Length: 373
Image 1 (cartoon, rainbow, N blue to C red):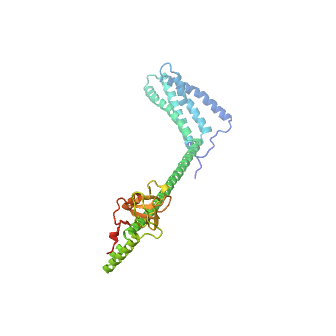
Image 2: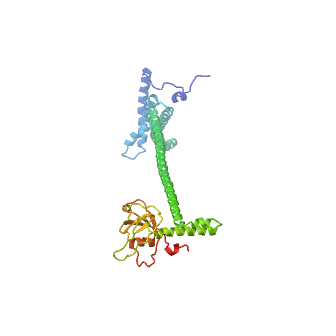
Image 3: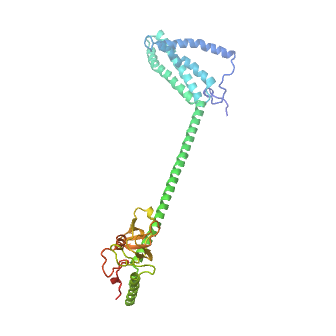
């Protein structure tokens, strides 16, 4: 296999030659002197042609145009020798060194013909071509400068670093967003769990209250065994007799005074003994000082409520519960009796126009109703 390389390979750096010039010898000095002298001629030709393409008074622009022709060729050759370090920079510098030389050749020939064969056909052709091509060469040099800097190793390194930083920031922002979403989700779940716990607790409390209320109402409405009598299919007569016996016993309790009570006389309107009443206790009530819904009053009669002796003038509190009233002592946590509205009015206002025989109240029954005969 041949190890020879072409001029193109040498100029583009494909064979890995040392592109830096190194030292300067006698041969280098001779070539540099030759190039300098000849470039004076080509530069003048290029300048003279360019002055014909600009308005009068703007000939200074022709000097600017030399930077895209003669001066540009020198600059790109120095860049290829001393500056370029990547493949694209080598290609850019060598390509525009050749393009600038081609522009120098075109302007030199055209300008010479304009003086030697001014009216010749070739002069007109080359003049028209140069008028279009030379501005393109100058502008392409500007583009080449941008390409050279964009393909430099330093630019690539800085771009790579910026891309890495941008990618890192993007990843970290994703992590931050994930942490934020997790925090919000955790807060939501904790709040929802707390709400559910409260709902469950309230449901349990409501179930307990409903059960207590149902049990209390069942007790109030089933004091004499009516439900028990209704639930036993047979033996209705025996159940009725049992109910009558229990009613008679309850009437005896209501009518007969308690052993520790004495008949009470009123110094104004009440002249007979006050009837007794026995009422089954019901719901709990809070202390009288803690609930503004409680009714404070003073007992106007002597009686017994659920074996609790009540004397005239005793301070009591009441709380309405559906169509009945819970009765308790002030500052006590529990009610000791549950009475009808009529009994409550009797306790609070006293017995008005009480006929003979005395009407005995106890859970809504009078003496006549309680008499089993």
